[in-house]
Length: 48
Image (cartoon, rainbow, N blue to C red; front, side, top):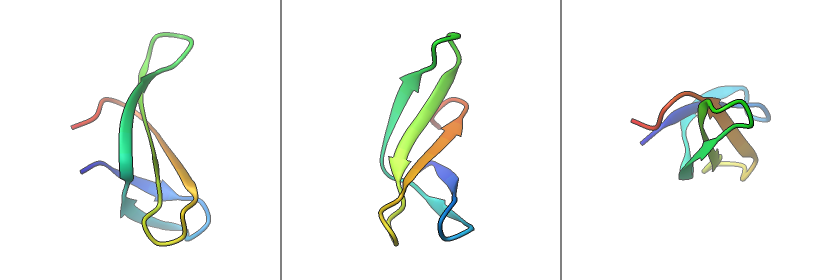
């Protein structure tokens, strides 16, 4: 699983439903949701 920082909980958590995406500039990123509060999470970098 991919870890990211939840902006609402202010904690590092594993992303739920993480999906790899490409930004406009061509960089890799990961989008998902926080398993505790349901807030959207985002992390720049490849999915591991």
